[in-house]
Length: 350
Image (cartoon, rainbow, N blue to C red; front, side):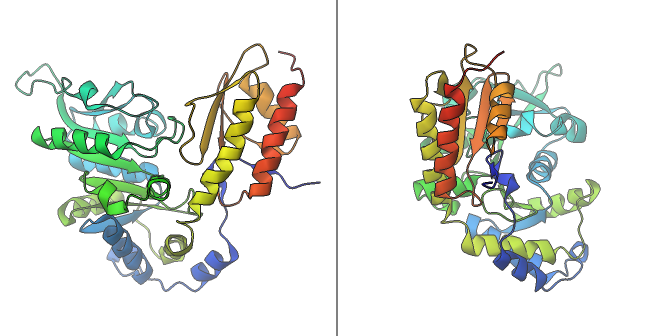
């Protein structure tokens, strides 16, 4: 029987033999004391790549984002973000619970906000009835936006406006590496428009654990203290940080393979009656599509695909996400595409 093709997420990637060897050989120390040399190398490497003064290694992208919200705001503040962004939808109410911050959501174009949507959204700071608008959070690439890449000119315009009005800019760049590879725009160019940037190592880069938050020395010093408060202080974390360093050395440029493989699956969706790509263009490694109710629903189709050796994610009653990654070859992408065509061609009883 052919092995299962797991397209549920790029978080399902497993460390390669080379990465495991690097992790086994990692030099370690106590990171809470600042004594882990491998973590220190990783943080320095990320800061340099993003053009920031320093960085902080954390267990997850959710923690990285929530640290950014916490250190930039005060209880009673408000952040502006897209309606479908990760910070608002998938972090368990973190801004409200951990920082006392409300989210004012705006309905972007598959996750992409335009400056015109933000320009009149700053609350009057002199009105005691109102929250204080403090922060803008953008996501690049945008997960629920179908892996869309934020146009750099839109980011630049929003950043310029935010700084004119004293607002903080934070980037949820969990999949920023995909945007870098797809556009050829350097990490520093993306990052210079933000006060803090979060990046993830455990998605397309294939490391087992970790994200990093980059920013100024003063900001990251606050984040380090808050990381401890949130329970994210780690000890001999060099074992996992070594996997992240290996990923930076070996797994960034190969993201282009994931993008090409996503196009194979996207073409199958586009060719199949009853399926609609949302958005209609696939920029990176995420393929989101809608199922016409006349042919079934996401639960049914997901189950049928699983029976045929392909795992995808049911992201709504009639919406599915397929995600390519380093553990999915071109041949497997082609097999997944053909399986999708066959499954949809057969009637589904709903």
